[in-house]
Image (tube, rainbow, N blue to C red; front, side):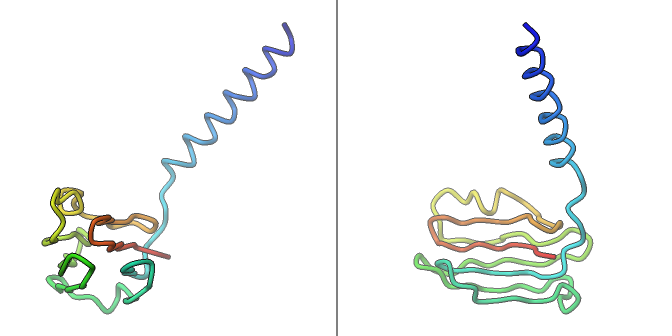
Length: 112
């Protein structure tokens, strides 16, 4: 019985640490990185972006367009993909967050 209690205790500690890690702030993003078909095609320091800047990226299906809005972050505004999940995702604004358009093979990530 003691062995089971010890395993439950370890599991609870691990769960609490995992939950705390997930909700800790990820830090300030410094770069906007764009990949198309697993190749980095664009890396821009966020300090160089101006609110309203729009960028067009060509993927296998066509052009994906994303926009930077000061105070809100980056969001996809147009994509040739059928379901538009990347557009529905909304804004990203923290390091580690990404917008992924699988059909067009475009990934937009904010990095430290």
